[in-house]
Image (cartoon, rainbow, N blue to C red; front, top):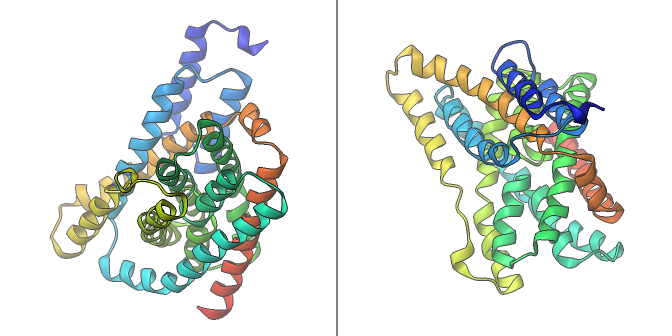
Length: 312
């Protein structure tokens, strides 16, 4: 059995795999798959460090990408995706309520899955769960469903994008709308192309700001407390980085090297995301939450794709 290997060897394998993710040899989908396989064939020797690292690496990487982006292009893309963002967020929350009710699924779990699908996956679930005081079991089920679908998205979306012959712009917009977590959006877009990545990051982060009004709405709906609302401050630093790159004469190491380093850090982040996904967590989610998550995901993917292809 692979799990009978000495802990020191497992740690060495895990560290070597993580280092490989910082090279040009490993793509974003492969990084995620590597993390998933290592955790399920062996185990994750650094579970707590991995979870904390994902949070900080993702934020730092997104801020770093801002140093390679242009503000005017970002604003143009943001405006194009605004109406679609409003439509998909509101419709996902409404559909989540009715589908969850039809499945006779727990109201809190339905709401958490719908919130994660509507905005930005785990971040939205974490923010909303703090406001509505969700139980640990409810949070873990919602996160398990969303993380499972995120993993699929990194492989499925680039393939579908090429099959449908989507442009870089269209794919970037579609992935930002239809994929849950920012890390998976970036992973899919990074596999598709540079332009798709810039567009996806811009739209996804503008979408992530909807965590704040959603948290306020959730507070009234579930009678939570205002001091529980979490604001994604790293988005402000991303905006500052974009403005600095657009209007200041930054040296090459900032406008070129930092975004390149950030892309490699994102691949490492996806490896750690994969390392946190286990067959056990997927099984514990149960059939009904997965049916709800898949239903919402398919609907939002199709609706947003049709809108992008025929109305933008």
